[in-house]
Image (cartoon, rainbow over all chains, first blue to last red):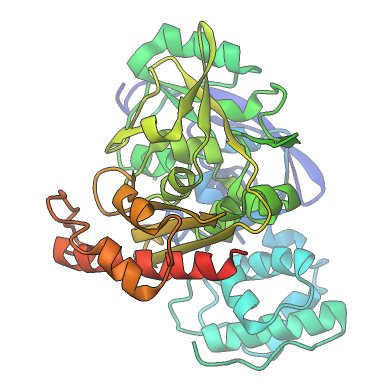
Amino acid sequence: MTDTQAPATTPVTLTVNGKEQTATTEDRTLLVNFLRNELGLTGTHVGCQTGQCGACTVVLDGEAVKSCMVLATQAAGHEVMTVEGLGKGSELHPIQEAFWEEHGLQCGYCTPGMLLSTYTLLQDTPDPDDAAIRHGIEGNICRCTGYHNIVKSVREAARRTSGTGTSTPEVAE
Amino acid sequence: MNPAPFTYHRPGTIAEAITLLTQHEDEAKLIAGGHSLLPVMKLRLAEPAHLIDLTGASDEGLRSVTLDGDTLTIGALVTHRTLERDATIRQAAPLLAETATHVGDRQVRARGTLGGTLAHADPAADYPAAVLAMGGTIVAQGPDGTREIPVEEFFLGLLTTALSPDEIVIAYRIPAAPAGTGVSYQKVANQASGYAIIGVAAQVSGGTVRVGVTGATGTAFRATAVEEALSGGSIDAAAIDAATAGITDGMDLLDDIAASSAYRARLVPGLIKRAVLEAAGRAS
């Protein structure tokens, strides 16, 4: 089969940020491109497209996944949260506030993925130590080398969402 | 960067998936988590005309972890995230739980499946080392029913297993690890991909030592000479050094951009030592 053959299309219905959405797309469309091109949700970024950088991270049924590694049709019937679903309009989510407060970004390209990986990490580990933070966001690459402030941001986000703030101080790795 | 076009199938059962496999033969590929297949499809290294998605299959047990007496059965669609956290796995198959934490990253672990990684038989994947150190069987379903393939007979070579073209992995089955079992997975990873340059899984249980090695050659293997030398005896650094001396002699070691064969020859005994010592230290 070649790329010039008429591609098969299917209507895909999924819940995005709490709202059911339907669009017809090619079976080969990746979830990241479906979100961006069909639904106009461009907060999810396209990075490496090989499943390594994490810029396209979204939350699928409660778990952070790389949306360049999921076919849109595989997500049909499932629930997706993108960075647009994190805050409420102009009201930032506490994780977003923490990244702002602790300068957890420079260019911002990796940030939507970082925020959503942080979101799922804090769901099951509300008060992670720095080793747990680094393990939790290891699937997200920042090329501004901003990891130090990102770890501080996640620590601050944990404090804001769980209110304990007992993370251990960072130690050399 | 989309894959080339294909016809998408989402069968509701494994039996339907097998029928599709039989119809389309080598024009079809199975997909579950997709983390090995989609990258090669994007690169046009694979251009299946038919993609058969197993994630719609609702067969009983495909997504569950079941401890029946002493027998642990893990469904093929169980994800790495479940393997690293599930209480039954941590108790009855601690080596699998430990190895799971080393697979990819959190997002990859959320999608990737046990059955997918076993069937793919990537020479640098983590689980082949673990299952070889644990033993047990791979349960495969084909047109004529199911059969159990001992793990020692499952991995045949680079990306090659004992599965027939019309068979699908539906589970991994092992005797539960006895209390006091000590385990360890030691890995030197490719910094970019996270895949193992060398990974060594060790399990020490009642004086019996089992060791699986991945990343060294085209397929994972059991370090049987090391197992025999150490089982029932004292396990210390000197004994391990003696047992691993010359272990890679005559092997066709991988030699690639990630690591030379000479470096792999040094890593194999080094990581066996670390893994066996840690597993023995955790055993009681």
